[in-house]
Image 1: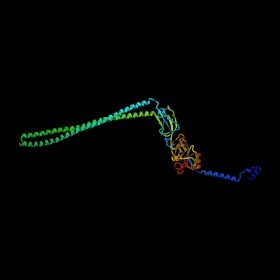
Image 2: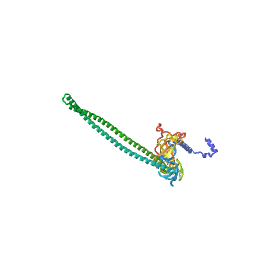
Image 3: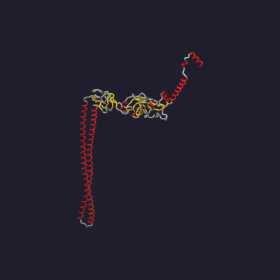
Image 4: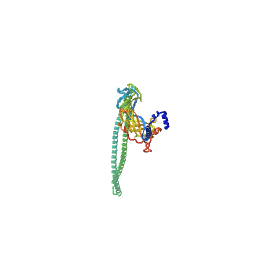
Length: 443
């Protein structure tokens, strides 16, 4: 080598001037070894796995998201306030436009129908009142008739009681005259009593027997009269109740007519009210699109009238993540967000040193994709005051998001990305398919 160098130096002495010094070569070797050691060290640095997604700002409450109002019927625009222009602020319930029906005579026809139905309702109501009064009179008549029949029944019972008392008296009289007749007969047969006296006693006994038989017939007749009077009470009650029931049935039928008339009247009245549509703002917000903007414009049922963006103080971000990462994303995962027009520096693997990003948490995951293999993930703020002001977070502002998953070495992440594998499962428990829990991060 020395001979060769000497020979070269003799032929090309300039080469000695361009050769590296010994210290430079040592430094180069040191840098080379340092680079190799640095690469090896970096390979084992902890790397925060994330699922990157893009999306946009929206309202957390679906009722506060943009709403398109459509026409409920055909008609012609009759009135639009002058201030109703795209971009203006409106308050809930404020009139935006008024729509009149196409048929000019339809309103008059409906007014005529309403008058007829109102008269029908009045007539039916009068019938209800008439049958109510008739029922009350039948109830009173029933009371009077039944009370009178009961009085007759009580009188018959009293008469029967009187006859039964007389019957006991005649039985006692018959018994006494019988004893006297038997005694006088023995005396007459023994010759101790004259025939004339005996005949008188016999006649008294026969009269007592005849009187008893007469009273017995009168008692039977009184019993029959009591039974007849009792049947008469039930007959009076049944007849009077039938009249009451008839009046009640007619009253209920008239009430049905009233209900039918009211239903028909309400339907026609609602139809009449629906002819003139007063379209109001369903929410307070801003008019985004005003598709109907001139008086006299004809519209059809279902035509889009305007779009309103409601004011919302509760924001959210809907991100669309790839299906490859979806299985490791769960409700509760933390998310770092970068909003469009908001300066930020995002370090994917080390979110703790990111600047200008904002924290969020997964609050909902759609059960199906959007038709292109992406799944919508709804992210709400951990703290509403942490996100930018409302003027910077208009609905529709684009946002980039990083859903925090597990923590792995850097070499594993590079190897996973090169092979297109999904993120790693948490190493805390290999049986659980969930990402490593990431501590709460601040912007």
